[in-house]
Length: 115
Length: 112
Image 1 (tube, rainbow over the protein chains, first blue to last red):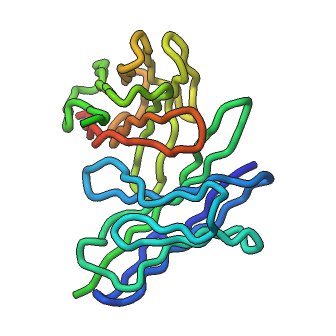
Image 2: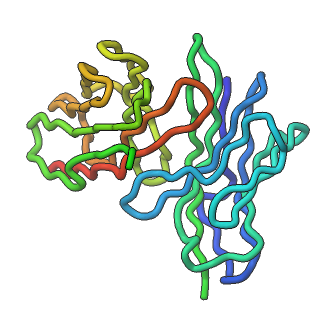
């Protein structure tokens, strides 16, 4: 069965430091992968998506993610954290089931940025 | 601008009452979804609909009902049969395929 695992429910980084949020997926077929960001009491906003084109995907707000098939990973990175990056981040995979695409979400990683 | 509108943003109800959460989209998306979000549990799928007048149960449909009479609208009713209804509810829509979701801003339901 397809699944998504986000390692670390809470991550803290200093302002200006590298942000690395981990996501591993389990899929028997090539997946479509997404990262979303959620600010408090808001919906989820799409950061970036991988749909089998380039393995390094650039998103909004300076984030990027690299699809590594050999490691079944899709980690999210940003070179320099900003205070405004503090939020919860969700990795998701889209898989084809019974003729339609279903989305499976990870349990989320809450990013804290320290001044 | 196109988007998804959820209303109300905050909702308080007494235990034992049914309550309906609104979700409207003007993106011309075919599919619509309802998710429930609880701390530390990520998003859990309640119901989804791919076309008008058709919908399917998700992973946690018990105690909930939906309708899809119009392409733009997908209201969710939280019934008195839902044992623990206090949560943050998110509505989403998508085109068929791999384009990802567009989410509404959510409704926080508190049952007292």
